Image (cartoon, rainbow over all chains, first blue to last red; front, side, top):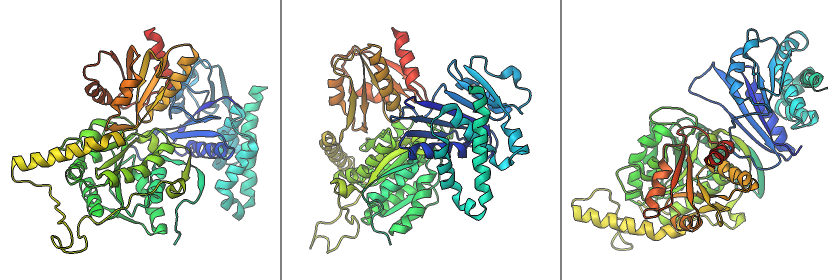
Length: 189
Length: 361
């Protein structure tokens, strides 16, 4: 795990990319790794594409933002267009297969392009609320920056108070995490 | 009430704005004055949540002019006081800042630079260097630290209070929107446990005793009647500043001893410059990096030594030549060519510095 990972997560406001980034870096930090996370932010109160820039490494990290990512996750049509600039020939580009009308705009220079049915799985198999946790599972499987176990600990830390009230939520979140990992694993085989 | 905010050494993973609030607590700050502006808001946010637990205070004012003046007022009463602002707020606050220069008020100002001119972006830049070092209708008798990491943000926020109270000049921690908003790890500590003694504060207005009988009168003025009178005062101010300067200046250098090219950069951009030097050295190129930590006073003697054998300086900053102007003025008479790499209002990565230098051949 000596490699330094640069991750760009992009979605519409409300899709939870910033909270995924937050939990991911907390977990990395708890595991003694170096992590740096910066959200993009502007003057708008809502709307617009939300991007989280995450870097995880074994040594102190350089610039807070980066030009090219190792992995880009785009969760809406606008996010696909917006994140093309972070892709080069080393990038794994992951997008949701439910996004329509972007086939022509998918980056052609990416090392790998994965379409995962995260929105569909969240809606039909699990619950729309755990969509971002599915995405988190996908990021972890694609990068191995942390283990699923430490991700679970981080989720527990963040949402444990809710799980205490309703233990089924814990199970739902953990299943979402596993499911997200599974969606990417089939490409990595 | 809890006594010390930080006991022992603790690893934190937080935003830079939270770092500033914790550092001010650890430094024994009594009160923060402030007015909201992005990307500084969370300094106030965290301070207002943390401060009451440790018996510290906060006052929100009606604007930045007032936030600056109330900070000066707090200091007059003997409080260790600070404020934080950015961009257009920094512009408005120049009036109280220049009063602090004139009256030697040890106030601390934390600046989180955003894009300019005017409202511009709330994100990031290094475009408030000129304003922070030389703003106001004065002579720039200010101490300006430019940190590059959360660790330094913590260290230099604590140090700013000591520099201010020791030398009695307004002292600035010049951060930026990236440092304000990003999360990374750092170690927080209690300054005393590390052997850092906080400079004692004292009442400046309303001291005990009768003026002229028990003590010298406190002669606090920012208004003068004659040119001659003012000139004497400003000369004293300038002399005191340059006398203190050698004790205040700080810098860092990386592989400058045999470097042909020296990258000069400050603040968060030093991270890109350091990474670029590492990579370019691995490619066999003789590149070094000089980084002023104090932008005012500028560590010119150290810089002259660092570039003594260099053939070229590459000046890298997220502004259209604000550090460049300082460097050129300080290097007056030197023949070394300075090549600009200016990206006003934009972040700079190691990769683009490497590409720029490699393309030059």
